[in-house]
Length: 150
Image 1 (cartoon, rainbow, N blue to C red):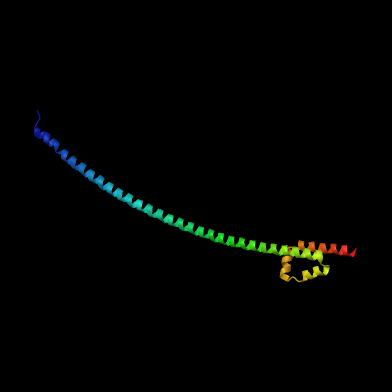
Image 2 (image 1 turned 120 degrees about the horizontal axis):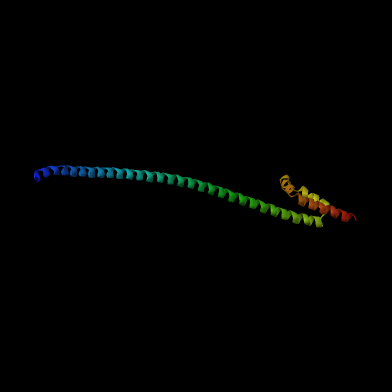
């Protein structure tokens, strides 16, 4: 038979084991808390960095949109100016063509020469660009001279 006192001596290690388990649980809880705090800190850093990147991207996008708007404004302005120039040139050419046709059909070669002499040098530079009209008028006047000399 065994003595109960001996078995009690064998049970003494159990409370120390329980104490070790309590210590282990506390250590895991401390580690869990530290780990959780570290994760929260990392999450905060990631969120902060993400916000910085978003701000940079938004700033860059704003600058690009501003540049595009400036290009758009200047392009529209330039296109409007060109359209006005073309319309002015077209009006001038149509007017010149109508006038030169009238002079060629009704006027003498002196009238044609006089008409060309009345234009300023600036206008003449413009008319150099439309020399085909002038040559047409001159061809019409030489034809008119040939017809009148017959």
